[in-house]
Length: 274
Ligand SMILES: NC(=O)C1=CN([C@@H]2O[C@H](COP(=O)(O)OP(=O)(O)OC[C@H]3O[C@@H](n4cnc5c(N)ncnc54)[C@H](OP(=O)(O)O)[C@@H]3O)[C@@H](O)[C@H]2O)C=CC1
Ligand SMILES: O=C(O)[C@@H]1CCC=N1
Image 1 (tube, rainbow, N blue to C red):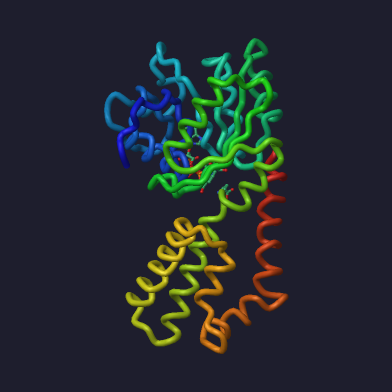
Image 2 (image 1 turned 90 degrees about the horizontal axis):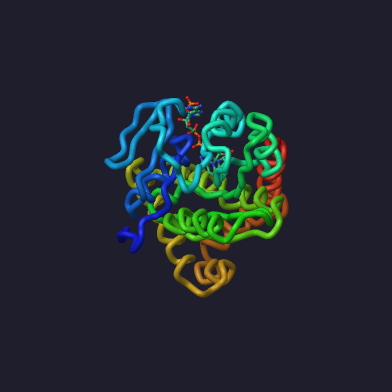
């Protein structure tokens, strides 16, 4: 990944697990103003950045441009309570599924009635770790251009970004691109298994499945053609693909299952909202 022409804003990354860690890898590759990572599991970051295992360990003068909330939604409240005292005027970028601007702001101001935070939401995905992330962002009307630019810069440094105009659309983004890599990894697992059932050695089945998803993804990314057209180009009339697609595209198969799965993810995001 090329070095960023100007360093990214300084962050306090609260939570450095799967998603926080993926973003941090990309940010470090780009160049980040001196930042602090909070995570209770030991990890290291190169100087001048520091890792703390509790918020009490943050060096007193440190004032991040953006606090990135990347803990599980169910574990956010104690973190918000302490942050509200330490950083009453913060710009917070939440990548948490579900939790709304209103619920996060309410918790923050309950913990410190003098706090006046601005919450921006984003839904990234783990390919951020290799600069191939896809993030949706939402900013409420009170967010300033600088606050939005800082948050957008962080996510643009690790992939593509789209802004959505209504907060509830972040739940839709979550169900498509936030959770989406898992759907693709599931397909890789199932193709690999099916390859073994067809008699391929396990190592071959694994390579064939992974590289097919990689190649098809890269072609989708580069080609101006619609996915549907790219699919047609593989499907010879009366050939092998058509037989497989009859199974995948049966009315009770993928055309029914994919929207149902996406709706289930979006529903769960709404359940996590408060
Ligand atoms: N995983 C993904 O693909 C995506 C996740 N997200 C969102 O990102 C957020 C994080 O998800 P994910 O990265 O998977 O979760 P993880 O559990 O992998 O990461 C969170 C990390 O923060 C640590 N942590 C939590 N609370 C504290 C605390 N008070 N002090 C110190 N460390 C703490 C956790 O430790 P411990 O486990 O011990 O609590 C864990 O190491 C979620 O809100 C999720 O909705 C968004 C997009 C995609
Ligand atoms: O499964 C989850 O809840 C998180 C949000 C999107 C991806 N992982």
